[in-house]
Length: 399
Image (cartoon, rainbow, N blue to C red):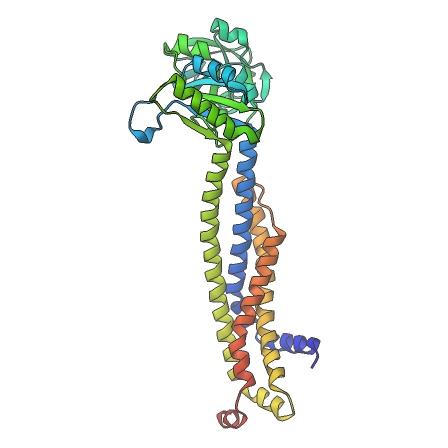
């Protein structure tokens, strides 16, 4: 028989038990679907995180007041003199953005936020953190020199306090102090920022000097954001900043974070989740393979007469073996194709739900189809060998 003959005979045999064939394929369908969705969500989440990190500045290094909370001591504060020293004495540093943050009550008319993030920044913040204006302007150098009572609103704060009104030129109360709104920021959404808080959308920005003198009465900083000249120089920047702070604050440690560390952390979490879901997909494929093997063994028992007749008229063992292997391969490959279609649909749906672009990877499609085909071949080997080696006398007696 030619390969096409095996294929047509297999289709004819499987078409006699359509419902049984479909139920047999379910395990393969679920396994392949899981593989597709797992790889798509994993790639989509990584891409989303990379884009969010890039939106914060690819060359960003952040120095937090230390030591880290886990040490159990009070954090050692940073000061403006530290920021100036970093800019002056670290040759690989292009710009620094000192900042302080606290939670204060903010209100406009009858709308009030009982505890909202208020961040004190300088004009360099917008350049270092790639903040994009929607309306108005950002904090200027003169604002910081005079401790001007001006504010820039994040997108979420603007929507809550002003709804459909234009906030520029209006005044808000921050902890009872009157501030004029001079600008609003474009929405960035939740992002893995290097400072406190998860999104600039939920922040109000004021001049650093205004926050320190008019609202807090303190001169310390929580964080200094630094821009390196080139991503390749980030390790050098970390070493330069560490040596400088050790000299300025002997015996104290500070927490220094980079975008690379954030990306590595997200990669580790993504890898663990991908491994777990891949293991689940492997279990589903294994169960599907067992289902195919069981059905093929049933088919051997049901088709004993057919096998005996074919052998009696000259069919070789290899022909019987190829016939049953073709049937198991068709079952698994058909299940794989249905799983790919379902997985693609679910990936696109998941992308809309989570707000990411969940790509359908060609490598994922190839892996899914190859895996399903291999499972089908492996599951069909034992039933096919059993059918090919059937003893004709014993088979006739059984019939």
